[in-house]
Image 1: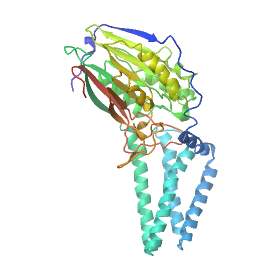
Image 2 (image 1 turned 60 degrees about the vertical axis):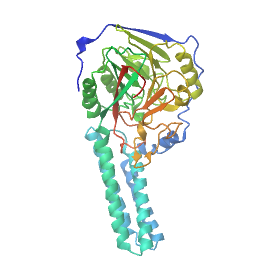
Image 3 (image 1 turned 90 degrees about the horizontal axis):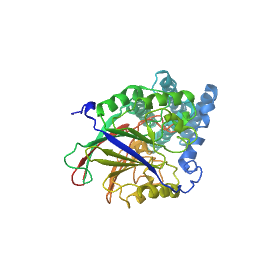
Image 4 (image 1 turned 90 degrees about the vertical axis):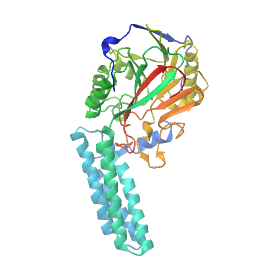
Length: 420
């Protein structure tokens, strides 16, 4: 891959514009009232449980497994012991993660999330033993499936969250002169920092350096949902943000209100060389005639409010520029595609974070569901790119990734005919 030396940076100007009329006031707690956010909160209750209380719960679940096998006229003692042994390996892994510097957060919610599939496997093995009339087959099935589960948990917890890579996309736009260099735009999203791990402190920064991007955009969710108000996490986030630089600037937007509280998150950018675009348009003009319009919107997840802010901002974007929308979620795509927006960059879904073969994202936490779950979508004259993001959500969302490694995306925007 060829990189351009930084001393070839051309003079440029940036002008900022905001709509004279304010957006519609957003409703409060739109995202918080959605089912999956409420589920995350409910299943996060064990965060404050003592080890003795967690142990007692695992014993009760093991007795439940015993009872289920007894309902099928099977001896449940062996099944209960097998379940309990694998549940304890999950506990050991969760205990070890923060001590190894891989991920952080309370054990209880994650142990609950991991034990639900293990109970499901125990039920399935009991059904197989009952249908075949073979207790031994049921036990063998139970052990094999639990081993597979442990392998999946290990891969999704220890490897995939750190397999951060860079995706490359190329687009051509007639607004850019043919005889000028392409614009290299790097997109980051969903850092969700809890503490610095090798994902942020080495791999992310190394990839950013390799990209040699002209400019960098970040589309929200800077802290892990379990560490929103944690002073250490905030300090660690500032350390990362302070090291993100680009010749033609770094531009950011706010993500979901529960993750990026409006009263605290903007201060993360104090005295940093990053422009936080809050319902603001940045028009970048290069000396060689290239122009780029960045439309940065707060993401309130109130589609009426966010749509009103977008429609006011798009009216300010000058003709003859490549128009790039920066908005945390893909939820505005049905509206945005009806307007002259060339590229719409977002995150929020994490690509599902946990994906199943042939099905994809299990949950996207977006009102558009699986319609825009990850990657590129072209509709009318607008291309939407939904990033898989960088970090992990927090609360009781699985502290793992499965078939969904993190990514940053380098877009090469050049002159010529439309197309990818």
